[in-house]
Length: 298
Image 1 (cartoon, rainbow, N blue to C red):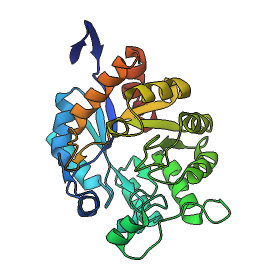
Image 2: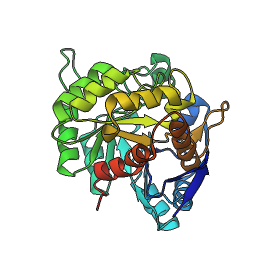
Image 3: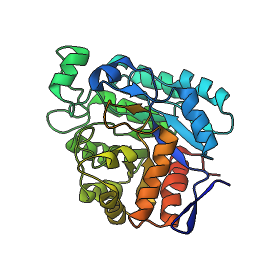
C-alpha cells in the first residue's frame, strides 16, 4: 500500500487512474506552446507504477496512441496503459475511419477536436494547419454533424469513452443531450480558460445531469481562473459521484514549470484535501469513478 501523511492524517491513493496523460514527442503541441515534454510513454507508465496507480490513459493530439501504450505497457507491467485518439486535423479531423482504427487497436477514449476545435484561437489554427476553420461538431442550426454522430456510434459500439476535448460550450450541451445517457461521456477541461469554454460549476452540474462525467484536471488548478478552493467548491456543486480527477500533465511550457503526471496528480489531490475534500471523495474521484467509466471496475 502506498501511503502518505499530511497534517497527521493518512490518505491511501493506491489504485488511482489518470485519464489525461500527455507525452512527447508531439511537434504541433511544441510549436503551439513552446512546450517540452517531461515524459515519454514509458516514463509516464513507470512513474504511475511507482506511485501505486492502477492505470493511465495516454492522450495524443496528433496520432492514435495505441503503439505508444503497447510499448509503455511492456515497460511497466503492473500498471494498465490505455490508448485513445483526438479528432484533430493530423488524423483527418472528425474521421470515422481513424477513430474505428484506434478503437479496434484497443483505444478506450476518443476526444472530440482539441487543438483544431472551433474554440481554438484562429491565429493558432493558422500557425499549425494553415488557413482553415476550427473543426465544428455542430452545424449552423446547432445540430450534430454526421461524422460526429458516426463517431458516437463507433464509441458506443466499442464500449469506449467519448471525451469533449476543447469544443465550445454550445457543442458540449449538444453532445451531452445526444450521448450523455446512451454512452460513456466525459466533459474535459471543465472550468479551464485556455483549453475549454470556461464552463461554470452550474454548467458542469447541468452536463452531469445530462449523463456526463466531469473532469477537473490538475492543470485547471495551475492558473487562472480556477484554484484548489474553487475546484473543491465546484465538486460540491456537481457531486463527487459525477467527477473524475486527472493531471493533464506530461508537457510543460517554459514557465511555470509543470510536474510530471504522477507527481502532479498527487500534489493536486493533496491541494484538494487541504481545500476541504474528504478522503472518501478523493478516492471516489481518483480511483472508483474513472475505473467505472473505463470499464475497469471489478
